[in-house]
Amino acid sequence: MAHSAVERRNNNRSTILLDEAAKQFAVKGYRGTTVRSIAQNIDMLPGSIYYHFKSKEALLMAVYDVGVKKITQTVNDAINEASDPWGRLEAAVSAHLEGVLDESNYARIIINIIPAEVAGLEKTLTELRNGYEVIFVKLIDDLPLGKSVDRTMFRLMLLGAINWAKVWYRPNSESPANIARIFIKFMKDPIDT
Amino acid sequence: MAHSAVERRNNNRSTILLDEAAKQFAVKGYRGTTVRSIAQNIDMLPGSIYYHFKSKEALLMAVYDVGVKKITQTVNDAINEASDPWGRLEAAVSAHLEGVLDESNYARIIINIIPAEVAGLEKTLTELRNGYEVIFVKLIDDLPLGKSVDRTMFRLMLLGAINWAKVWYRPNSESPANIARIFIKFMKDPIDT
DNA sequence: ATATTAACCAAACAAATGATTGTTTATCGA
DNA sequence: TCGATAAACAATCATTTGTTTGGTTAATAT
Image 1 (tube, rainbow over the protein chains, first blue to last red):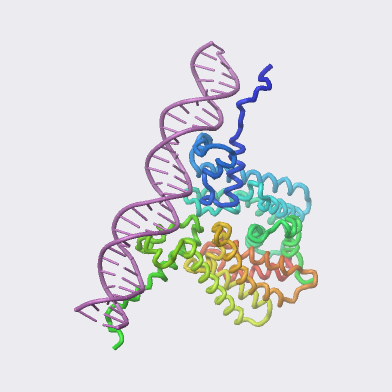
Image 2 (cartoon, rainbow over the protein chains, first blue to last red):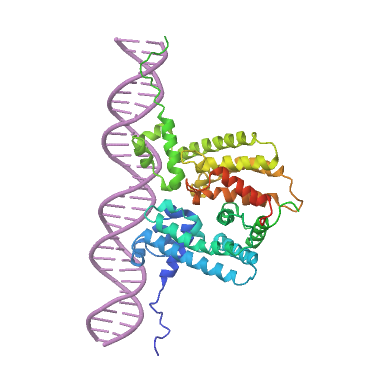
């Protein structure tokens, strides 16, 4: 037999480490999170973190990168469930909201980390976020809108509205899916009927 | 004579100190801003700040308070220039945007400081911001909207959209007034004409 | 002229924090 | 069994950060 019931050395605690870092960065920001508190919450010594990542900034980068990949995946999956353009956009908005409002989700750091707060990573973080938002550029391109509609402003308005939800959202507010439906309706239909 | 041409003792560097603090808090957040860097930028020693304010938190509070008062004033003034409900709302949005997008404006910190980042001041800061936003509650109450329209969600969407502008706004983007006009139009009119 | 006070400077402190170094333990392939 | 290596520990360092303390200077009041 290959390896018995003996506990393997395969303690892939890098994953646990990444999870914990994601959670704390999302809630307390970059500077509000300390290497020590991350280590403590996963029963690891502060110095050990530096075996997995060469610096605190590198740790944030790793978390941010995973966060972008995960929410990109989630939103893309959601899009494929719908067929008509407006339905696809609503599905994307709903998935995005679920991601950024779920406390256990990596995606939160995408909107909770202020790039300027990190300095050394400002440019890279901003680029990663912009890359993700390309999904919405395409979705909005596919909408049947009048010639006079500025699609860029349309996107900036919609994304701003949903990203700001983190500020006012409470677990007993409307559900992410409802918020998505309501916001899309505001954009799509005349307001007074 | 009262006091001659002799240089007055009126070295009111408290104002300069407050200005610099406002600027740095707005850009780098509370934790990202250090007492030292504020002092350095106005040629003052770190310790001297504690003559004017008893703590870093007290300094933030002072800045935040001035910020809320200033933007409240600005927006209220703008409202009085218009008469119809939609026009008043657009004026308010425009004034709000000008305030929060102007780098030299105190109002920026209202949206760039995350209350949860400060801990000891979370409640107070949130209350101050909510107090300001009452202006928009009233403006939206006055709109001629259909019975089925959720005015709270309407406000959250609109305020979110304009508050997020800080993330993408560049001096060569649309002007604050144009952004206000476009966003209000999105909310008011059918999208495809 | 003297006393008082506003407004700072100079220096330092204690705590917190990111990071480094040397060592140990456990697993696995040869 | 042995050597290599992954993964962590234990201890410590150097720096940063908010804050304090005591002294200094110049304007104002008495």
